[in-house]
Structures are given as C-alpha cells and as structure tokens.
Amino acid sequence: MKAANVSLSELQIALMRVLWDRGEASTAEVASILGQDRGLAHTTVATLLTRLQKRGVVGQRRDGRQLLYRALVDESAVRRSMVADLIGSLFSGDANALVAHLVEESEIAPDDLARIRQRLEQGDGDER
Image 1 (cartoon, rainbow, N blue to C red):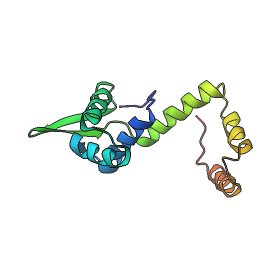
Image 2 (tube, one colour):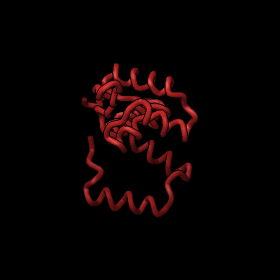
Image 3 (cartoon, rainbow, N blue to C red):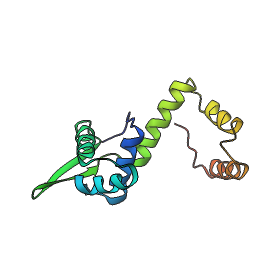
Image 4 (spheres, rainbow, N blue to C red):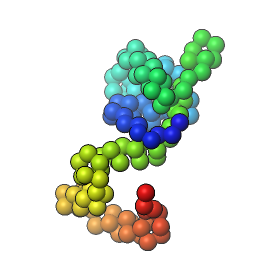
C-alpha cells in the first residue's frame, strides 16, 4: 500500500513499530510487547489491529487458529505522510518554517545542524 495519507496516533505507531521490528506477529505477541510497555489488554490490541487492517495499514493471514499481522506500509512512508500533514496544517505548507521553529525552540542542537547541513550537501534532502 502506498502511504499517501497515513496518519497514526502515538499508540498506533507503537503497535506498528512492533510489526516493523518483527515483520509479522500475532495479536498475543503484540499484546505481550505493548502490555509490558503500556499496560494494554489483549482485547485493546486486537481492536487496534482490526481497525488498522480495515484501513489497509496492516495485513493479516491465518496460521492455524491464530491471525498473524504484518505492516503493509513502511515506517519511512508513514513518517513522510505525517510530517507532510504537520507542515501543511501547522506551517501552511512551508517546510522552512518547520525547521526555523525547531531551531528557535532549541529542538535542534548545534551538532544536529552540522549533520543536517552535511546531508543536504550530499543530496539526501531531495525536494518533493
């Protein structure tokens, strides 16, 4: 699936990270991992997985009696989509305004700026 406009909540991203890390996981496996970190019940995880599956964000297959889930969108595509939404909604489509905000609010340390400059010089910051 192309992640043209995939916006996920913090909890959905945590769930997706389990799938991105493992490749494929059962509801019980995801619930076990998220249960340790967030105290989520198995039923909550099952509901989240079902909703993401209906949206086309995750796929499922049956293995015996259990369902196994896998991500249908990759992390970088979700990141791109969500950052584009952020830039569009909070910065009127101006990516420079986002970067200026991060610099002004000291969210970007001086050594981070050097790494950003280096990436831009190498061409990793291709414009879209």
